[in-house]
Each structure stands twice: as C-alpha cells, then as structure tokens.
Length: 401
Image (cartoon, rainbow, N blue to C red; front, side, top):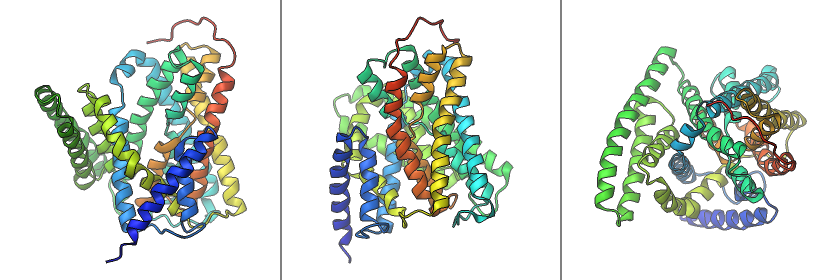
C-alpha cells in the first residue's frame, strides 16, 4: 500500500494555511492562498503532488460540505424582508452574466481558437461558463461593508438578500445544465427528473424539519448528535440527487443545508461544520482546483480570453444587479453600490467550475483563466466597494417591496 497520500495531505494543509495567512496580510481572502498552494505544488509548477482518486473523492466531500454550509447560512427571513426588490436584483444579476459568459465563450470557443477536451457539445460548454459567472460570493463584501460601517444600510441589506436568491437561481441553472451532461438526453426527461427531485427534496426536507425540531428540543445539550445527524442528512440527499435524479450532488447538499437552517439551528450547526471544513476538507478542495492546472504558462489567446472574461465578469454584475436595483427604486448611487457588492465570485464559482470539469462540461484548458478571473474579481471587489461607498449616502425613497 502506498502511503504517499499522507504526505500529500500534510503538504496541502501546511501550504494552504501558510499561503492563506500570507494572502490575508495583503487583504486578500485565504481562498486565494489555497488556490496558489495547489498551483505551486501541482503539475504546473513543482509537480510534488498529482490529483489522485483519493484527493478527488475527498474534494467532492469537501465541496458538498461547503455547499451544505452555504445552505445553513441561508437566511429565509432576509429574503422575505427585501421581497420583490431582492428577487428582481438577483434575477437580472443572473441573466446578464449568463448571457455575457455565453457570448465570450461563443467567440473564443468557435473554430477551436482554444483547444478543449470537454466531452459535451460546444453550446453546453459555452453556456456553462455563463453559469459560472452567475455565481456570487459575498463573504468578502460582508467583511468590507462591516469594516466601512455600511453593512446595515439599505444597499447592504439588498446585497445580502439578493446574494441568497442569486445562489438559489445559480443552483437551479447548474442543475439544469449538469442534467444534460449525458451522452443521450431528452429535454423532457431532464425536466421531469429535475422536477421530481425538487418534489422529493421538498417532501424529505419537510419530514426532516418536523422530526428535527421535535428531536432537537428533547436533546438540546447533545450537539454532537445533531451535527452527525445533519451531516448524514446532507450526504444522503446529495447521493439521492446524483444517483436517482441525475442532479448535481451539491444541489442536494445545499437544499439539505437550507432545510436545517429553517429549523432555526443553522447558525449553531454551521459553527460545528466550519471546524471540519476549515481543518481538512476545504483546503483539499481548493488545492485540488490548483492541481487541475497542468500548464501555467498561458498562450496569448488564452490570456486574451481571461482578460475579456474578467471584464465581462465585473461589468455584468454591476450592470445587471445595478439595473435591477434602479428598477426597484434605489438611487443611482445605491444601485452602483449593490452591483459592485455582487462582483466577487469567490468559492461559489470555483465549486461550479469543478463540477463542470468533473462532468466533462468544461475543458481543462479553461481552468487556469477562469481561476484567475475568480481571483481577480475577489481582489477588486473590496477595492471598488471602498470607492463607491466613499461619498455620503443621501435620503432615498424606499425600494418597492
């Protein structure tokens, strides 16, 4: 038996933590450091570690855990509070990047301008990049707004609520596209499977909600049991989604998290899961993305693709979410703030990208430029936020509800 996997884990955990702390000193998220660790240790640079089956499977558990945690953090009340405004902002903020990403890929993916090894059709690969751009990760935005003292402003509340709905819409888009990954698929069959999964998930989650609330009240002090039960529920729903319905496992994990969050125990359990994720699973998942990059020296056409994709990624959120906010009665200044706050793609886009690569919906040649696009959007978001929040906010009419 080869025990090198133990050394691989040790190197990944040590390097992701070290580089994470290093990037944090430069006011960048630790996720950037974890990605750099995978790039440096992987085939593109030092070639100390290759992506083995063990790392792939561990990363898959890690991504499910990350999405489960995102579900646990979903605040249904926040969605209800902003209501119509947040929904419109999120909807337009998903459609514009989706079309933007599709347009960029249509230009660069035709006539084999960039060689691809994706097993899906060119159209599915094109639209999948659009799905990646729909993602929003507001963890950096939240920290920046908290630092600026703007988290509880009207624009800050709109960003938080719209980001939650954005995630839900993104998951639906991902579910639909991933369902077409098979060699021979029928649109009707795919839609029926997706509908069947959501009906199945609703029933299971409702039963789980009722049982969990009663059980939690009887065993308030035994949090270890609740943590294990919640994790088991996450894994089973993830398995059912993928195995029986052909829906992405991370969709099941996210819905499981939302169901547990609805019980009012999400915050308590998220702290428990955050330890396991931070300690082991998340570093391996983010490093595994860096390990997928086999060539860091990019061709001129790939660099051009990355630049164009980054510009579209930034502008599409500012324009899409900004237009939605303006339509709902927010001022021009607030609309710009809301659009800027939704730019960061962060770990959400990386999760979507990794799923696409695994299903053959995205060629490996696009991994490096997309990763760099995610990193750049994550870095520029706090910088742009500080600029757009620099001027004083004036009294504005209430947005439509």
